[in-house]
Image (tube, rainbow, N blue to C red; front, top):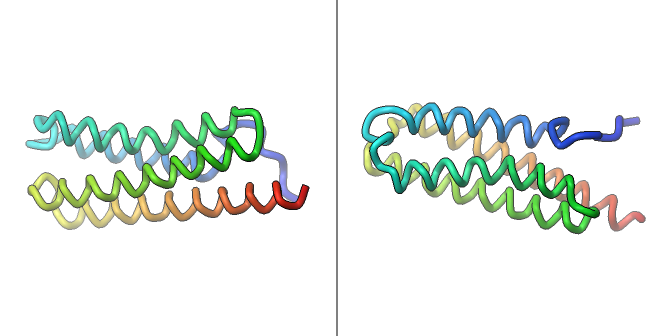
Length: 126
């Protein structure tokens, strides 16, 4: 039997998204990345969006709303990954940091996708 989640902070997806966001903020505070306000702000917004949509969706009125916000969170993972490619291509990230952040973003996207499928399955069963 699994315990009922009481707060959005209990979700592993949110916890991992928080860790990813902290890593994004840390790397975007360095070197030329810190001075490219457009890309820096966009990459930060996409990472924050993952966390925020998990939280907002959980606090909404029901499972269909939660599913919608989880879909947005998953899409924000894809947006973040796309921005990371830009950062790599223009030399703001070396391959090691890129690989680490991409790996985290892929993992978060997979966890969010699994959570969304679980919510959908539970909703269908009711």
